[in-house]
Amino acid sequence: MENFPHGKGRRRTKPKPPEAPTEETPKEQFEAAFEESRALPKKEREQHITEKLKDAFPDEGARQIFVKENLERKERNRIKRRVRLWRKINLQSWNYFCTFTYSDELHNEESFKKKLLNTLKHLVARRGWKYIGVWERGVETQRLHFHGIFYIPYGGMIGELEEVKDYSTKLHRVQTTYQNSHFRKHFGRNDFEHIVTDMDTMQSVKYLLKYIEKTGERLAYGGKLPTYFRSDILDDDIACPCGIEDRKLLLFDQFTCVKDGEVIGEVCPEVIEQMPKSN
Image (cartoon, rainbow, N blue to C red; front, side, top):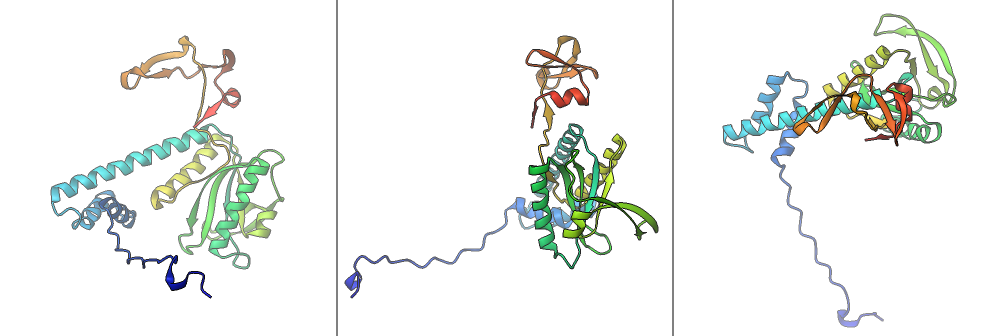
C-alpha cells in the first residue's frame, strides 16, 4: 500500500536545466594570458596579452589601457609581496636552508606534497619550527622538490643530521651535505644547510624570490611570522614626519623601544624579541 495514494503529497522534482557555459571575464582572460607569457620579456609579454584580448576589447585604445592598468596592478602586488616577505624575514632568526625531494619507492608527486606539508604543520605546532618556502621543479628532470628557509629551535630537531658525500651533477664535483635521517626515511633525499650569517639569509631569500617571480609559484608559510613589531616612540627619536599628510614618522636608526610606558632598550634583535608583534 502506498503512503501517498494517487500521488498526493509526493514531492515533484523538476529536472535541472543544463548549465550554460560561463564566459571568461576580461580579467580572467588577462590572468590566463599573463601566465602563458610569464617567460617572455616585458615588451613581448604586453604584446602577447594585448593580442589575446582582441575579442574582449575590439577597440584598440580601450584594450591597451586595460592591459597597462592590469600590468601595473601586477607590478604593485609583486612589490607588496616582496616588502611583506622581507619584513617577515627580518623579524625572525633563521638557521637552516632546506631542500626536500622524494624517492619513487616512497611517494608519487601528490602524496609527497601532501605528506611533507602535513609533517611541517606538525613540526610547527609541536616543535616550534618556522619556515618560508616554495615548490620548485628541476630544470632537467622537472622533478618536484621543496626549498625553504627554516628556524628550528634548540631541541626541536627530529632525526639526526648525517654528513653525506656525493657527486653534484650541477657543480661537477664531490660535495658534502647534511641529510636528516627522519626525512630520508619517510621522503627521500634532503639537504640541511646551516645559515650562519646575515649574508646567508639574504642569499637564501633571494633564491626564493627569484624562483617565485619567474614561475608565479606562491610562497608557503609556517609558524608565527609577524610582519611588524609595535613600540611607543620618544620625541627625540623622530627624524621627521613623512608620507601623505605627514601621517608617518621617519625614525633615526638607533631609536629606543618602549612598551607600556617601560623603556625596553635601543632597537636590536634581543629588544625586538620582547616587543609585541602584529601583521
